[in-house]
Image (tube, rainbow, N blue to C red):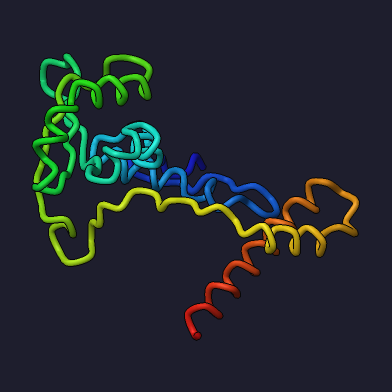
Length: 181
């Protein structure tokens, strides 16, 4: 007996690895599908926007979608911009387009369209334009204390990771103590 032929719409699950799998590997297909619905075939534009656009532009812009026209002569990138910053961003669009195309590796984007909104986005708290927070220099006393705690470890990689962990914990403790005072 030949069995029932499978239709094209049958989604057969792919065989998974044995043992532990990285979480990123489990979510890769879902993230790619969600990004492609908004035109982002390359997710790097979303995940590394701060590096691509630069710190100043990333604080006030956010990529929303990429639309490919009928002619196939390039795509249109839509950016969400706080309305007060739109004139300044408008002046930097040629440089921003060059940076985005450099990230793609070819002239993928021919136009950039700005969509203006309030600084908090369409609904309260949904789209804050903050960029990456500024990194403060670690306290030398806390760094020395974390290094002395990890000193007995012989493996250099493990020792460095434990120093970072200890420094993070000590920094968090010192900031909490400063808030309660």
